[in-house]
Length: 212
Length: 212
DNA sequence: AGGCGAACATACTCTTCGGTATGTCGTCAA
DNA sequence: TTGACGACATACCGAAGAGTATGTTCGCCT
Image 1 (cartoon, rainbow over the protein chains, first blue to last red):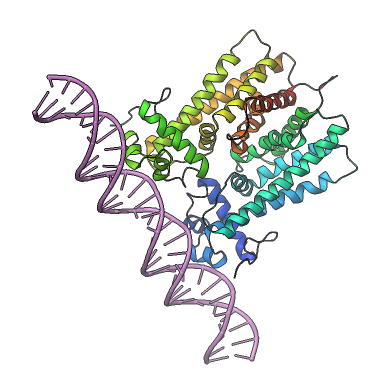
Image 2: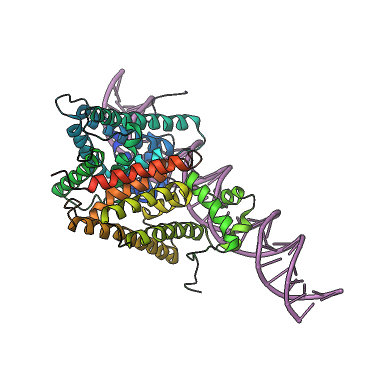
């Protein structure tokens, strides 16, 4: 009655998959507020009924997309960050590379997710507001993973003397921005790899201690 | 009747100033679609009538903010880019520094402007749609200014071998992202300077040719 | 001294959209 | 076979909000 597992994480139930995909596309196109439930339904050749059969409210659909997107990010980065066999710079490079890749291949989800963390309010419902704060918390955790690697690199003398937590801002800003301009229609696997390479180089280069 | 100078650039008429300021604040808080004309009016202690006296439609207010914001960017960067007395790396550093500063001091305008360039459509009115494309064109011009400086630096051997146009993406992405997380309430002049320093270092470092 | 228009406020209209209530169809267990 | 339930579609309601039509006030020009 109060807090059921609405907007569950991980494997979205079979019926919800299509809805999330359609909604992510629609939200990406017109933004959250300007997107109609009918838009979402039309996107998948269905009607409102289908959406409301699986979700209580528009905000819940939105939150499910965002949570899924954030989880994909975390799942992808954690194993790299924890790989003790690699030096900090290499790990950071790979983390940036992977993050960049997700911004392109999972563009609609990631773009919606990025928009979510810059929202302060999401309607009146306190449950939804709380869910939004949970997402913010995921974002903070995510930033901390990067900050830890930066700190390692700093202590190892390979990165400049920076406030690691603050250093994640330009880093993730550059990467997240990809979701805003990259057109998922264009570009094959190779061009995406090249792009991710460029980004990773740029980022590690930006943190690396200047020669001498 | 067709194309009057709605959404004029440069010095916003005296009566429009307050409206733009209030609207920028409101749009920053809740986004374009979710912001009511009444919200804007309330923000400045007035009513709808005041807004509609100066603007034909909500989209026109929005476009005026965006155009103003973009113009501020261009006006600030152009003299630096054209300063032949400085080497490319120094010029790029100062451009980044200045851009970062605007993202903080002019946060509301810049944040709204950033959101605009990621919008593809803005209602049905063709005049507004065209105005939006004009803004996109300003953005392209702006990116080109950075690209030119990067090219100079590349030819001079101080920057890596990159596609200059593409290199502006991570660069401006990192900078633009500031508008999304920076809280204009917090921070004095000095902390802003420090932050801009960090960003400029990061960016120039990211492009600089690796040692040896 | 009077009227005219700029600068708003107020009252109203009309559409759009989130959410709900209800109907319909197929499937599967008893 | 039937009836119960999941998986939707359809019809409907109410609120919100963009834009408009109509005041109202106040300076300024003649």
